[in-house]
Length: 179
Image (cartoon, rainbow, N blue to C red; front, side):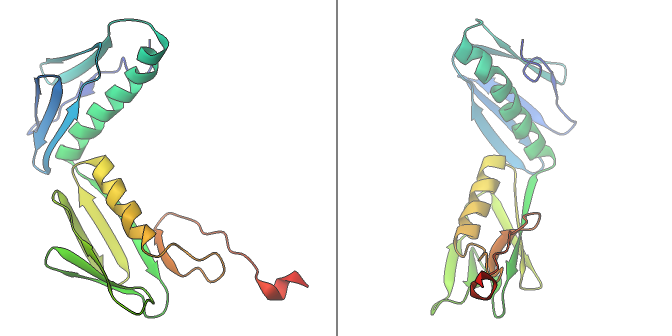
């Protein structure tokens, strides 16, 4: 039995969960998240708890048991509290600004980079150099953060670019250190 998969998921007050046609749906104050259920898995909802059970003991089922439980737990936590990722923009003249449903970045290119904000995600910019991505779906928050970081990856020589706030950039010495 999976140590993660056998743990029940506590559903906080103000959060509704439902199971229809092998799709688990969680709805709360931060939004709504739907997660498809893998075949050969049983999900039961009882008195504020959700439990995941597998029908067999084959290798792929054992491997996906903890994964499915984590995905459902992330959905419940996301609609109740939300997920957040923070990115830092490092570099002279590098900045971001939210205009309507778009984020305009000045990243040292000859043109401004415009990133459209997808539905279910909110982006805030503090002091022109700290971007906060927030949403109910953990996968979508991570994907949007990765796409924003990809606009200008951190440079290992000067450290310029967009990086996660908790990311450590290993700096390289450059030409002067090669002697």
